[in-house]
Length: 72
Image (cartoon, rainbow, N blue to C red):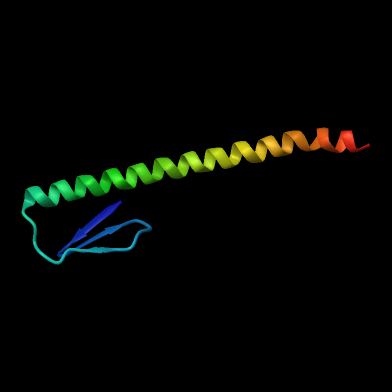
């Protein structure tokens, strides 16, 4: 969620962004859209990273019984 207050933008789980100058409404809209796209892209990269990690963990656990059986 994005919260707007005078001179400040807060995004969940992110450091607040302080705006030093008052931009035009068009510029503010463009900056908010860019910020939203960055957050969305970051979230998709995080989900991808989590999926890769889960796949690696499942591949490790799937190959463990074979390795234990081969050691016997």
